Amino acid sequence: MSSHHRLNASTQPEAVLLNAAAPGGGAATARAGSGADDRSEIYVARPILGRQEQVAVSEVLDDGWVTMGSRVRDFELAFAERHRTDDAVAVSSCTAALHLILHALGIGPGDEVLVPSLTFVATANSVLYTGASPVFVDIESLAMPLMSLEDAAQKCSPRTKAVIVVHYAGCVAQRSAWREFASRRGLFLIGDAAHAVGLEDAATFGDAAAFSFYGNKNMTTAEGGMVVSTQSDLLERVRQMRSHGMTSGTFQRHHSGAPRYDVTMLGYNYRMDELRAAMGLVQLGRLTAWNERRRVLTARYAEVLAADCPTILVPSLQGCDSAHHIMPVVLPAEADRDRIIASMRSDGIQTSIHYPPVHDFSFYRSQLPDLRLPKTEEFSRRELTLPLHPGMDDGHVERVVAALAAAAQA
Image (tube, rainbow, N blue to C red):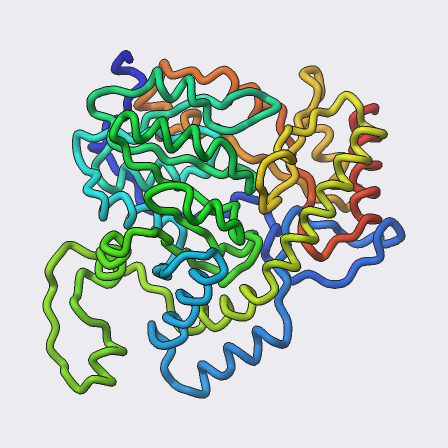
């Protein structure tokens, strides 16, 4: 592959966490809606937070131990059990989770990692943090906006050491094919499962998986992430690296009475605190019901869109195992997306775009000026994300589609 498709990691950006949803998405808690008769704003994403979370956080404050402690460990074990794995490591964000996984696997300067460009920028940034270079891969098609196995094969080189598969919209697909792809080439297989919380297949997709608990995700701790792997030695390296490479944490030293510790590897300050873990335990207990609600709403969207918006494409993600994190649609090629967004906003309906291609951002474009990913670029130009969260009902779906149909026909 030509050198202009490869990114030099010599200039590394600061880790900046951005909301992948439109402004306001995930910023406030959900309230009960009354469907089509409710004229209140419909957010593209909205967490459900209530009395249980308040009580859990208050108990942490009353206990007085707010940094990483027993609740973090309880959350890790509960999350692992929910995803049918033996263990997990809680961290400060999904970005941190990806960085730690790559670092623990020995990815570094001179290495290349295959990544999709249709993702949040953190996927590629995490590769740069290690000194390695992300190599961007196109998607399969507008109807299947997942990373292309064929293009990935063409982008491989002797320097390729890993591939990060993003479970876009919560869809876990082609698991066997990606495992064979990685195994045949001796690559590490990493799952970016930011959209796929609650899916067992996402947790065991490859060598390790990174989950997100950001405010617009299927469950939230406000900020936070989790590393899951079936490899206990990998998890132990991640566990130590998340806290400066120290051999013990403050909580362990406090309760053991042994104040000494060693630093045996390069580490980072990527810890999760007790407040977020307490929230996470409550949210995790409701995740199954919320994901089922998302499935029902997604099915209803497909029905109403087929009837009322036949020229709008719904990507064929329903056939895969999915957490139904977002509801993407593809507008007709001639549609004015900005006008449709503005029209729907005037009707009190928030939308978003998932995602602007990472390789088109100024930072990446300056280093990869000639890179073209035609399918990713076309999908991103025409994609529109409709509201989807458990606080919605069928009436909200019908109101969203009615507004979309009117805007598209205007």
